[in-house]
Structures are given as structure tokens and as C-alpha cells.
Image (tube, rainbow, N blue to C red; front, top):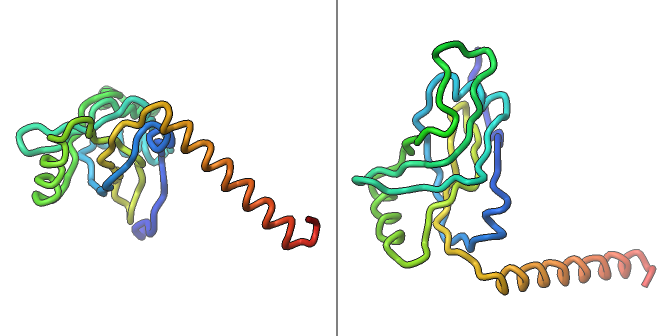
Length: 158
């Protein structure tokens, strides 16, 4: 059977972009069991409460929910188990240095398959204040209004 090509997104954490300012992003592999991969291929995963943590020079993903595989037997996995992320040593060292700053955390942004391999996109994030969130929403609404006006103008309606 030929290997999958391209990128297939399984789950994305859209709330992360609302709650955090993402400074850097990294693509990492995950250490998974067979039933976890099958459950991911079925498109079932949640990144709602997930976060990354550095421990002894390794990065782990906590709180990611991959539901049990329905056709699995006694070999099924724990849905919220801690999963090890596969990164290059230089990337881990860069992350560790940036994680020492106050208020910086590791947040998973997407889980996807890239050429058949399950990967996660993680970002170094700094929490936003509530007024930052309101300001982002206001600027996004203003940008939508500008594009609507330009569209109407291009059609000769205004």
C-alpha cells in the first residue's frame, strides 16, 4: 500500500490563538501506541487542556485527549496519558531557555499526519490579558469591515 502524502489535520487548538500570543512554533513527532494512531486516523483528538512540559532534557505533552479506539481490546491506551515528543536536541535547548522566562508556556496548536507520520505543532506562548483579547477582536472586526467596503466599492455599489 502506498504511503500517504501531504498533510492531514486531525485536531487544531483555535482557542490557543485567542488566549496566547504565539512567538515560535515547532513541529514534533509523538511516541504513540497502535490504538492511539488508529484513533487519530479516525479523526478523534482534543487539545483543549493540553500543554507541554520539559523534564530532564525531554519534552512531554500532558492533557491531550485521544479517545480509546472502538475496535480495540485489552491493548487499548489511556486517553489522557503523558506522551513524549520527538525533537532535535538543539530545539529542546532553545525551548528550555525560552521556557525559563516568566509567563512562557508550551501549547499544542495542531495534531496532524505528515506523510503518514503523526505529528504535533507546538508553540511557545505568552498569555494575553483580557484587554489584549478585546483589542485583537476589535482590530479583526475593523479589518473585516474594511475588506467588505473595498469589495462593495470594487463592485460599484458604494
